[in-house]
Image (tube, rainbow, N blue to C red; front, side, top):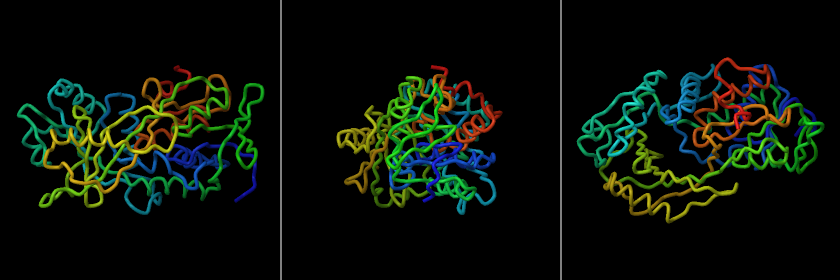
Length: 374
């Protein structure tokens, strides 16, 4: 490891947010950066535990636009960025039933406005694609025809590989314990292995982003980590799930999808908790399987193969926080990506890199993301 102790940009956190920023900074010619990752490998926490799916529909219009920008990169990455495709076009199906049906017209309108490729499915068409669904005649679905599963390892590796090729550094087992602020401006960080000076300190620490901001005396934006759980299991015999889309039902608070020859299922839980390495809650899983019994009874598993949890971090208005802090100059927020950090990383990485390297960005109205909005 280089013993260099001064950089233009220090990025705290080696997940998808920090990695994407390092890549897009390097693309803009700002290569004097270092990623500081507390764990022994990048992407250990939320990045490595995600269902990793491009879903270009979101109830929040700002988030939906960020996803659409990210989708362009995921479908057509720069030449040489990745060795394998970043996106498998396996499609995503949102089921609208009972009280959720009233939201369907607005969802259709916004998808059309944002240019997202989709089809509206009748009950029969939805069941034809996923025969285990228990739907009533009025029920409908939206099929996002160009969306699907993201190869997170390929995406994270691509960001890091190309950033490091341009001299950006990655330091693992490097924990930030303090932020150096002098006369109202960030000057660097204190780590378990010494000081690292920088003109910019970027808070891309995921569930720990609020704690890092406190160390800097930055604006008191309340970021809330919330647990999300996923389990995997074998599908019933004689049912081929390999060509199913990623299925989401907000009404049932469930999603499921093909995964490595089996199925994954999430209770879509959002249990607030302090930053940690979260463990699955068996009561939450049991409740999800009970709901699955009403939505797709033939899928109810006899046993589970794996179960895990990760933390998704929410801002007060559920929109990411990206930009220079209004109180501490040189302290830059790149946090609050909730559960869409992977699919939006090409958008947020570019926006953040533009703001740091150039002071403005032309790809998005950065005021909607600015920490000053709070």
